[in-house]
Image (cartoon, rainbow, N blue to C red; front, top):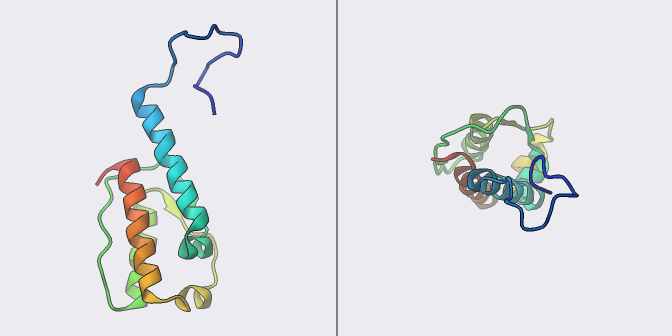
Length: 117
């Protein structure tokens, strides 16, 4: 990835066109994508972006019910301009509650860095 509008023939040492905010956003977006690719719950949901990431985002609530945890996770995605692809609900609900809760907490951490809390 190179700085926006940076020509290959520009001299080395010229001032980069990446602002600190743009660089931070690019880093946080990449970290979110890595998390989505590795997380077992998000591998099932395969979220995709439907709009510009927006926030702030609210922390997921703990629950003793898988359905509530999944609803909270889907809501967390929607809050920030992401949506789950079609998925197998049986595969999702076969996961342990702790795995779903951990996924929601990890996703919140990545989204918070990206769009704020």
